[in-house]
Amino acid sequence: MSESEKPLVHLVDDDEAIRHSASFMLRLAGYRVQTHKDGVAFLADLATLEQGAILLDVQMPHMNGLAVQKELNARGCEMPVVVLTGHGDVSVAVQAMKSGAVNFVEKPYEKQVLLDALSEAFSQLDSAARVALHKAEAEKRLAKLSPREMDVLRGLVDGLTNKAIANTLDISPRTVEIHRANLMEKLAVNSLSAALRIAFAAEVSSESD
Image 1 (cartoon, rainbow, N blue to C red):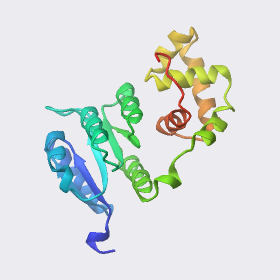
Image 2 (image 1 turned 90 degrees about the vertical axis):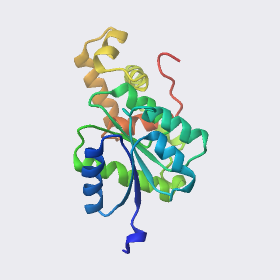
Image 3 (image 1 turned 135 degrees about the vertical axis):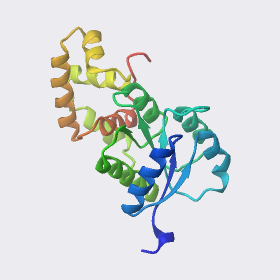
Image 4 (image 1 turned 180 degrees about the horizontal axis):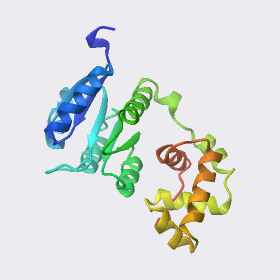
């Protein structure tokens, strides 16, 4: 594969050290990388940028990742977005996926987790129709869940932790963990982001809606 044929990653992160280390790792993995020092600079160049996937840090000065994602949507940008969130920042990750992010990766990220997320993003870029989970299919999967498992899923859609879901439903955190494991098994997914995509495709409302 020639250099120009390699998939392009737009890395948007204000941390210079991360830009350097992530770029090096991604290039070794077979990607081309274009770095952007923050969201403002990235959006300023957007009209001239080559199509690719966007690796977007959430915590940035001037304009955070969620604000950048909102502006990308407003401009009709169809490049898939993978967001980098702080460890355990579930609510931000959920908000990003509600806004259309393909996936999220927690910092400090493991190399393979990041590469898998980008691979998924490029699959979407190659054929949005092929990977889109249609509403009917999503609803069919959700029909397998018990009422209590649906309650737990709605809590996850709302960005709640297991403990917060337990408090809301007046059950123990351990029971929430069991319901969460069961619903992931019934939905045939192995990550929170995959479960959320099914919920969003079926237009499952959060508890606060």
